[in-house]
Structures are given as C-alpha cells and as structure tokens.
Length: 177
Image (cartoon, rainbow, N blue to C red):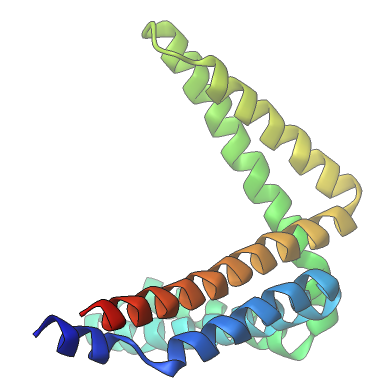
C-alpha cells in the first residue's frame, strides 16, 4: 500500500523539472536583463488576464468601478507586453516604491511596538534598511534590476533543488518499501 503511494508520487518529471528549474535559476543570475524582460512579459500577460476578468466581473455585478479597473489593467498589460524596454526600466522603480512603503510601515510599527513595551528594534532596523534600499534603487535603478533577478534566480534555483531532493527521497523510500 505504501509502495503504491510512493510509486504514484515518484516520477522522472520531478527530476527533470528540478534540473530545468535549477539551470533556469542560474541562467537568471547570469542574464539579469533578459530575466527582467521575461518578467515584464509575464506581468503584462497577467495584467491582461486580470483586466479581462475584471471586465467580465463588471458586467455580472453591473459595476463601473470594476469596469474601470479592468480597462486600466488591460491598458497596462498591453503597454507592458508591447513596450518591453519601458517595462523593464520601470520595474526597479516599482520595486523601490514597494520597499519604501514597506520600510515606512515597519518604522511606524516599530514606534507602535515601543509604546506597547514590545520588542521594536528589529522592526525599526528593517524599516530603515528598506527605506535606504529604496532610495539606493531610485538613485541607481540598475541595482534594482540585479536585486530582482537575484531573488528570482535564487527562488527558481531553490525550487529546482527541492524537486531533485523530492525525487531522490521518494526513490529511496520506494527501495525501502
């Protein structure tokens, strides 16, 4: 019974997918600009799909707000897909603004924690780091490109390694069963 469950779980696809993802993660590290363009296409397509969903949703619920969001998402998606250079250049700015917003929120949370006699120094440190990092990216957008692709590459590489380990573990369990 256990061996049958392991046989269903184990497949060469885990190994193949793991190897492909690990290679892709390394490729992303070595080719950050190409990776940013790929991310731009991905985000553009995602905006188009989400915009179409909002449009359909707006007709169901007769909502002008959903229709407006859908049209805006469609426009942003088309701009992202058709103007890869602009999209690739703007992603670090978007990332920097996100880091700035999160950093400010963490700083505010740190002062709130301090008033409530809770541990607050890590929140304050992380918030200050986030704000400084955001300003660094805004001053030098290429740092943002390398940061985004480094994180993406690391995630994809680790995902690939996990798939390979899952295959090896399931294979060993099958031999023990």
